[in-house]
Image (cartoon, rainbow, N blue to C red):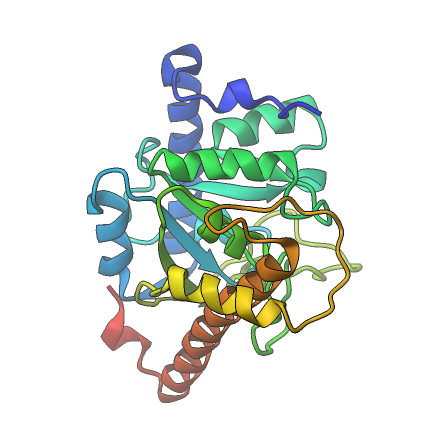
Length: 290
């Protein structure tokens, strides 16, 4: 099966003008929702902005966050000081095919917005994951929601899907991985607002809090070797994953490796969640907004 409308996501599609127009419109919408209709506070924003604008050439950036609402992306990038109108710097993002790519018009719009369709339940080796790998190979910025779906419960970070971990391992250049936690978007766009449905427009006068962490360190050579050693003692069902280089890791070793990386990311995100609660309790957000 071919890649859905991939040509519309190319930077040179119609001279890049449609993409720029989409980012101007979506950027304005995000700014209005984040900073005019609501109050958005960001901790450690400079780390994110620096990595978006000034990371080493050819080195990809992979940001990961919890998923509180259908507005998380793009509105979480609408805070003051973030270059949201710059289509060249903007993130690529994995987007649910059944929501964002339901028809030709939506597919074209979200492709212009640098969205990559992902089939939920389609596995880590589905065709569009290769497209995400290509963007990382280009040194681009990719954002993922590794929980896999929206959850508006105030609860610990759930077990993460392995797709993000597989991208880290399979990327030709290991990306800089930056965890982010946010809350408040579940109040701006509640899933069950009226008759079990979302509101037609974002709600206002809500507080949105975004906490940017520090880049995570992955000792991939050591982690690969540990996964290979551990997998030899396990009897796991297989579904036919291909072996990957280096060391031709089989499916069992990959499962061990992806589980370890995913848990490291989940732990970092959970630490940010706890960090946010401690500051919210003290009412200290204003003192550390960037």
